[in-house]
Image (cartoon, rainbow, N blue to C red):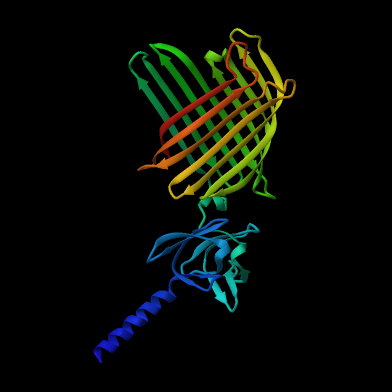
Length: 339
């Protein structure tokens, strides 16, 4: 008799635990029991007792039911905080603040438990800093140091970005390369379509051994955030820029041009990030004086926010002064910190 009572009690406990857990009903008929962690535009992060946290494509999910309260952002921009998603017949229901039922389905759930800034609460600060150092001793003593920084402050309505890099090379204690670049940007996102934005930039660049004392670029642009999810981000921009170039030996130059930027990151494998960036400027008065800087690389996370990356950078300056190569290629392995 005792074993039967024990088994029955155990079964009730298990059933009670299941009833109190979050549930994902899949389109193939399977049911996942666990804890809903979050959801973005394409994937749901769900914690299960047998496999830990797993990422599931939204397109494969039929219904989401939560026992714990969650914060929900719908595709139409409506926000529901500290609410449960429950089943009512064949419908999914969220109760609004006045307790009126709101019918939803999985495609209308844009974000679940998003970061506060996605709900209009403050800014998120993130970025990374990297350095690559090479020292060689032998027939020729060489030292190379490359550093770069990106710092971003992001809110629901705007974004501030600071990017910079610095490179210095020496051979036999004589400097043969010294260059730096600093770019400041401000983006304002549209209230009608938050993926579109207007921006303004200020660019400063120097390359001592390319006779470039200082290049400045200032102007507005329009952009679109095509993707902004944990698995991939992609944005593109195009605008008008006023460029002023000051040379040490050659004649100074200034012109109006068009600029563009493309930035892509993608986690092609868990823990491995592919990134590709391109920045270009087209001179309206001299199309041959085209500037295109392209960077591609792979990042590998280490520990405590540290990461390593292998990178290739290709820089083309069609307006380089006579006697200076118009193409510069750099390959390096960097160690950095991400926050």
